[in-house]
Amino acid sequence: MKLKPLPFTYFPDDFRKETVDRIKQTINSGECLQLIGLPGSGKSSFLSNLLLQRLKDCQVFYFDLNLLPEKSTLAILRFLAASLSGQVQDLADPQLITQAINQFLKEQQEKSQKTVFIFDDFQNLTDPSLLPFFQTLRSFHFHHRPFLTFIFALEREVRDYSPFGSLGTHLSENILFLPPLTQKEALWFLQEYEKAVGIKLPDQEKKEIIAASGGFMRTLKRLAQAKPSGQSGQNLKEVLKNPWLNPHLKYHFEQLLAGLKSEETTLKNIVFNQISPADKENLAVLQNLYLIDKDNQPIHPLFFQFLKQKFSQEKVEESLDDKINLKQRLTANEYKLLKYLVEHKTEICSKENLITTVWGKGGLSQVANHSLDQLLYRLRKKLVSTSPTVNLEIIRGRGVKLSIPEKPKGPWWQDRE
Image 1 (cartoon, rainbow, N blue to C red):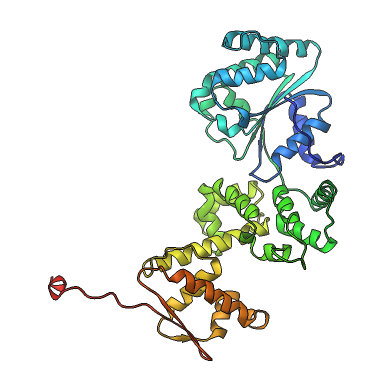
Image 2: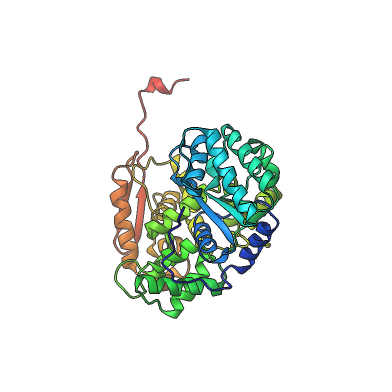
């Protein structure tokens, strides 16, 4: 299957060289490999680079398993056969398909030609019902090794090999975690992206983008798409402070977090600096995925900024749930403000204390009263539909007071035990 090239005209010879060299070693030995990369890490782009430039001495076939509407042994074998030769007459007969693929591999081996099958999005195939497919792959590999290599691209490492039968042994031979881009590679990526879309980013903003991205290719791209600082509307500086402002970036980070459900508690502990011995195994996983370093410090700062806002908001939601039934979703700053006002209900809270609560101590010198007024205005509109009713009173020259009416008591007989 022909892979669409990236909009870039070339890749530097040293682009992800260590990873490419490791894969070449695996191919030369005729072994198999798991290539692990989280969503947005640039895994598919890396495979494009691998296919288009680096494996010229091999016959490489790329199979994007997302294109398969049906995940069955017959459907996958048909997909392989059609991509290899397109000469199979009866695509409904599994035996004929298997024979055609085997004949193709035999001809490649007779020419001493290395063949590489790359299965992208392989996690869609970790179903025990596909055991016949994996048995077929195992047979191909047994008969054509060392001229045949399978590369399985996944978001997470396969740990249970039982669905793969004897092929599981080969799956566990080599496990390679795709590292983030280096600063040099990230700078090259941004420069090529500038050429591709016809923009020019200031050098300082490129440095800020690279530092915030953790070397994740999709994060680099999303940040490059933000408006340069100084332009009207959402700009890069605002997005770097609050990634929730950019819907594409927010969706990217939500996808990233969705793949880390098993490690979510540990991520919360990292964010709130509450790591315990119980997190040891998950910390090792997050290190392998290049989200934290060996000291458990974030490698991807903007993703952890997103997590901090998300987890902080969830904490506030939990603390408010018992007091107020909110009908509308609040922003992180609206939750901070409401939480403080609820904790100090019936008191007159000064604007200085409210600014410090929402924006920190530095907010007193950096945040105008107008910003607080706008935040209060938006919050009041959302509190109209709460249950019980919440009254937010602005007392001119003094501050803000929140009150929650007491729930009316029922008839006297309902209070009797």
